[in-house]
Length: 398
Image (cartoon, rainbow, N blue to C red):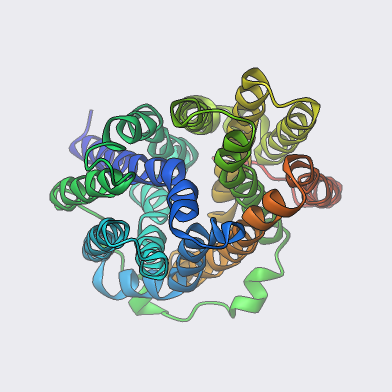
């Protein structure tokens, strides 16, 4: 095996580990954030406002994060993002300590800004891999989330009482430690040097790139796959609490959901190579519709578990498929603006639906949270079918 091949594998492994640390913190925060917000907020319908501010900040920072990494490089950019996360989680712990809901919202926004940086790990994987290994590299990096799925909710259970009687503060302290570990590990990555951006930094106009069917399919898959997953996952802890389930039960459901999100990544890249991107996206849509049906059928522990598992796998197929599809829409010198545009659109949708989640759950209930899955999935199916009938065929080029 060549030295270059080994370096690619090492880089993918580093990115996978760093994503695992990031997603461990993210799954831990998802398990706690709505409940922490509910404990701090006077108006309980605002319980998910902190996590909504987190996704809003992710949306707003995706563009500057992408261009910052274009100027300074991936490693420096990822490091800056981790320091923002370290400050945000420390501030969140302090805001819980002093019982300040609005300071907690600010801290959550900083965590969201941090999230916008590590979302680019998946694109960095595509950049270090060759064209044939690209889809697999993206899915292997996301496979690091399996470790996150196991550790995140478990750490939430361990840390919830660290500073008892002040609940949830310990979880944010734990995420701060994960940020420190990631800062150290990311320094070992070696990203390839590219000269295409200096040769022709502008490339094609963004509007021309965005008109491509491949870009449209990628964005629709990503924004609806991620947005719907966030809507349902954010409301789940509140719905389970309303149904009388304890924190440990909620953490277990989120853990199983996170495992379902990332464990398919070991094979998603192979499936994309075998069946094509559009087929995998369509399967993801169908799985999300099954999630909707299960969640609307009942509120037993089994219903929550099965529904969230289908939701996790559906997200994986739609998000990995959309990410892989997006890399086919741009040249190397265009990647910063295209990746930024894609993630801005995706996380705009995520932010809007996360804002809606707590309000819908509080005012209308769990049934109506889930009925909102239907329209975005139908739209996605229609667009993918329309694109499949066009001359563009969504298969990864060899």
